[in-house]
Length: 104
Image (tube, rainbow, N blue to C red; front, side, top):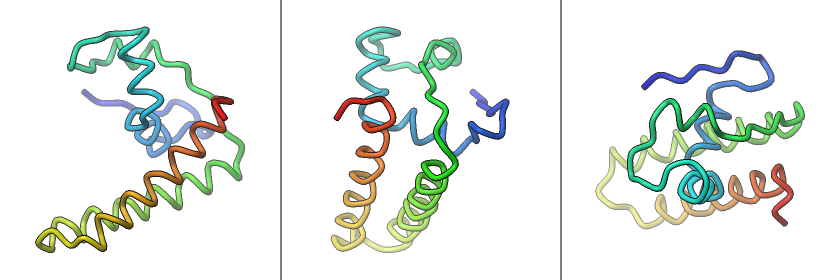
């Protein structure tokens, strides 16, 4: 499956962050498709909030940090520090997405 942002306001990294968020996972399970398979038609039904440029910048920073940490975790053998940092950054991203969707 390929997924592309059609507008500058919704870049691919933002879509990736949304799809991988706990909120969107619960949303898909409850309202779109409660199977393990996520398909392109499921993605078309997702409510996408357009973030501000400031929110996008913060999401981009966290996204880049997560990519860097994941690469480091693949290169090392189960480093607990990396896993803790991954959890911390993922938590920050979850908070931002929760604020975007007015869940907090």
